[in-house]
Amino acid sequence: MDSKEKQQTSLDKKIDVIIIGAGASGLMCAIEAGKRQRKVLVVDHAKEPGKKILMSGGGRCNFTNYSVSHENYISNNPHFCKSALSRYNSYDFLDLINKYDISFSEREHEQLFCDGSAREILDMLLAECKKAGVTFQMDTTIEKVEQLAEHNFRLCSSRGNYTCHSLVVATGGLSIPTSGASPLGYKIAEQFNIKVWPQSPGLVPFTLQPKDKEQLATLSGIAVDAVVSNRRRSFRENILFTHRGLSGPAILQMSSYWQPGEELTINLLPDIDLVEVLKEQQQQRPLRTVKSVVAEYLPKRLVKTMVQTNFADSSLKTILPKEFVEISEQLQQWTIKPNATEGYRTAEVTLGGVDCDAISSKTMESNKIPGLFFTGEVLDVSGWLGGYNLQWAWSSGWCAGQYV
View 1 (cartoon, rainbow, N blue to C red):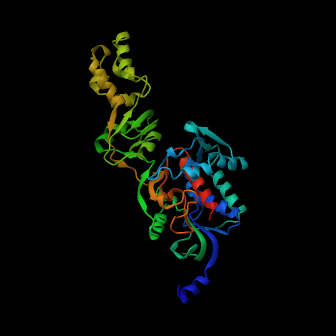
View 2 (cartoon, rainbow, N blue to C red):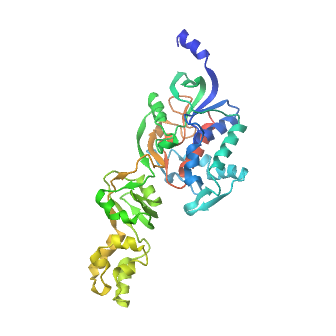
View 3 (cartoon, one colour):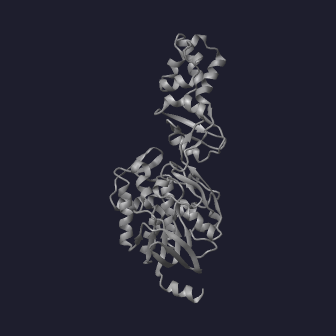
């Protein structure tokens, strides 16, 4: 460093820990670092902290899940998240929730939501930050990040320059641009020669090919319990027909495991053997139509669209055994090739990100750059739908907070 740089650096404000990103993992890291008497500054380009927290769970914040395992996450290093999830688990976060008397409820698949508003979670985190002496600098553009020496970083921003002992990148992913998403975290990783896996939107609805969209247009608003599968994965939950394509929990889950050009198989009647049901009804009430039988299990609009007309309006007595198999396949082995996903605009998570092999699973610190940490969604760890992504944010942020 030359004399001019030294003089410039001497004018910088000195902080122990700078956290870039005032989202879930950044706030949790700030709380834990502040508890250790570290002088912490959280910097973000948004005007207010925690915007994505407020949007989560439809405004009710699906803040965790009673059952969290590394198997609920997608990563090129599938074991990376085990350490953090075991050291700060969903029950640890529930202790904090209970401390603030926040009322919550369990929904299906052990998902936990606030009874009130997601604002309660954010207010809790900000209250903890205040107690820990954390400082915020919002509405700030980061112009440059550089390493001056080991455990010595310089951050140049639109509101002044800082040096710090530890720099935490908690910038999130690319999903939901309206929440302030940006690629800054990936750029910082690449600046320090840390590998970044390609990103793509996850937990996102599908759009359809023009022909399928036209055929299914009348079904908008219908939701049914279904099994959605490809060759690698299968999920059973509701699917929702929309005016743009397919959504609902099972579709969102499958989107994280889907490759462009790939077909999906959908079973709209996962609990019955439709061939046997139709054969049985043929014996008992042969004059019934196929559609009247199937409509006992599925909405009439859906039956009309999915079952070929020559079958749907026919009486059971006229149907051959092999045709029962055809009818079953139309509803229980429906194959469809999505056109694409709706992209980052509606995606709940970003797949890919900072390579976990380059990061300590215990501390979230770069293996090669002492003092540089990465937490939350910016890492190549993407959770399922159901509170898993926020739990990863809490766990990874907590771990980094013990070491920064």
